[in-house]
Length: 302
Image (cartoon, rainbow, N blue to C red; front, side, top):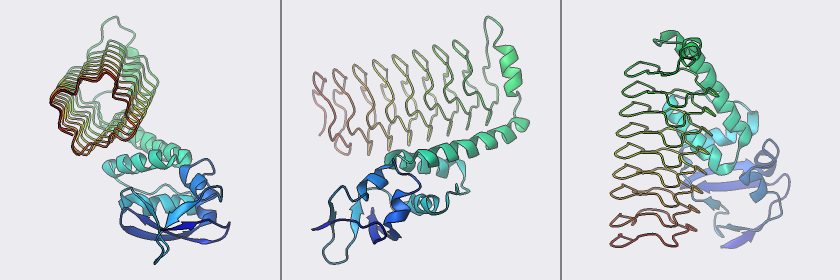
C-alpha cells in the first residue's frame, strides 16, 4: 500500500466495503467540516492507498454510501423507508455527519406528525393523560406518534404497538415496555433507567446515547439496533438477540449478557468491565478496543 495525501481539489477514489466511488476532496470536507471524512481528507493525515488502482479503503457497508456522498454534494436528505433511514443513520453516526443526522430526524419527525392522524391517540391526548397519577397505554396502537421530550416515567406501555414512535430525549425512567412492538422507534438520548423491555421487539430501533442503567431487556429482539454511546450499566440482557447491533462505545459495565446472541455485533471501544459473558459466543463479535477487565468470560467462545 502506498501513502496518500489529499489536495483541496483532487479526485478521490474510495472503496467502501467493496463498492467503488469517485468524488473530490472538496465534497468530502466542505459541507460537514467536523466529520470523520473531513478529518481523513483534510490533508493533515496520511492514508493508505491501493498502489495499483489508487483506492482508499474504508471497512463499512457501501450500500448507503451513495446517499452519504449525495448529501455532501447537495445537502438533500434522500427519500427512503423507515428501515433504510435506520441504516443510513447508523452510517451517518459512524462518519459523524451531524447535519445529515439532524436532517434525517427532521424528516422522521414530519412523518410521525402525519402518522398521528392514523393512531388511536395523539401527542395532545398523551400529554393530557400523563397528568394522571397512574397512566397505562397497555395494548394501545401509538405507531408513528411523536412523544419526544415528554416526562413518561412510570408509564405502562406493555403490549402496545409502538412502531416508529419518536421517544427522543423523553424521560421514560421505570416505564414498562413488556412485549411491545417498537420496531424502528427512536429513543435517541432518552432516559430509560430501570425500564422493563422483557420480550420486546426493538428491531432496528435507535437508542444511541440513551441511558439504560439497570434496564431489563431479557429475551428482547435487539437486531440491528444502534446503542452507540449508550449507558447500559448493570443492564439485564439475558437471552437478548443483539445480532448486527451497534454498541460502539457503549458502557456495559456489570451488564448480564448470559445467553445473549452477539453475532456480527459491533462492540468496538465498549466498556464490558465486570460484565457477565459466560459461555457467550463472541467469535463474530467486534471487540476491538473493548474493556474486558473483570468480565466473566468462563467458557466464552472467542
